[in-house]
Length: 429
Figure 1 (tube, rainbow, N blue to C red):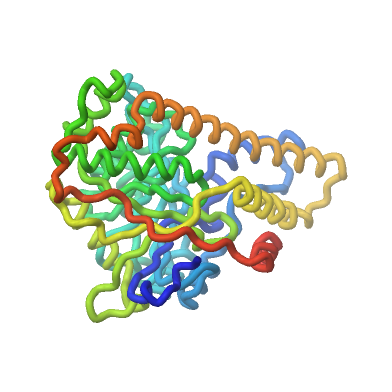
Figure 2 (cartoon, rainbow, N blue to C red):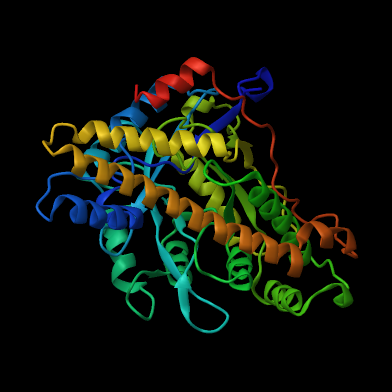
């Protein structure tokens, strides 16, 4: 089933998390490892390079102008390329595309570090920073999204105590102070933050990504269950203390002190193809067609919900749709990226042994990174099931107010694309 049924024609479908070729080089931690390995295999002066993403901004510009993805209509795209301390510049070609195409906004996926429960900074969930409700000025004209001035301010004032990356909470506070819509990127990924620290930071953000095209259905299900439980506790519901582990008691205490109503987003996180495998949707404003809705309308709604702290809120206007990751989809993504890298480097003359070493090493590092992230995710989910399982705790809630915001609203799973479409994607067409 796709998401283009007649009942959804007044729904604005938005890709809220997607990458371009700007998510490579110094913006990517994986690129650091692979680049070092290539230099070991081919020498420091080798012209061989590796890219995490090959999607040009013009491809996404064409998609939003055409308005049709692989699964249904696409009305808006929020580009969220990686940014870190080493690299946090908006490319000129992206600024030009956003100025030409008002429904293409330039956000960012910001690497962060978070103070854990032991007081030490650990790699934490990334922040999806989108933009303010109004147009910002750029060198090629006004556009929706982040300004370079704001990005520079983030990295000038919001680094963690070690000055290594952005501090999650400091960056969030500045984004809110500057009126910038933002959310947590899928927070059960492979970062080093403890379970208690992870659930604590989720409860403090008004928006978090539950469905992500790169992560499993199990993690999405647990995130959705945690959001429902968090929202019930913030709204005044209670859990019997006897049903909670020591970790659970601390998590509930944190939610009661610092938690807020959390709303869900759905992110594609595509790096090579199948761009609309997961989208966030909202109803079009009265009297307007989905094609007439601008990113500023979405950002305005998100900020309105972010700034309100009352427990009794209406249901979120946003709904999540899409597919989570499977082994098949992950292999498709990795294969497409590796094949594109091989093809882009064929112009360089190297002996067959060096080429073989590069190919084997690159594949090994990619698989090792996927396995590492998978181990962290599985360990965190096992601990969640043992120490604070929201699916098991939800039936124990008492005195839940009727007005509490419900959990995430997921409508459909996207229909897998045709065999021909998958073949074209792997071929890089």
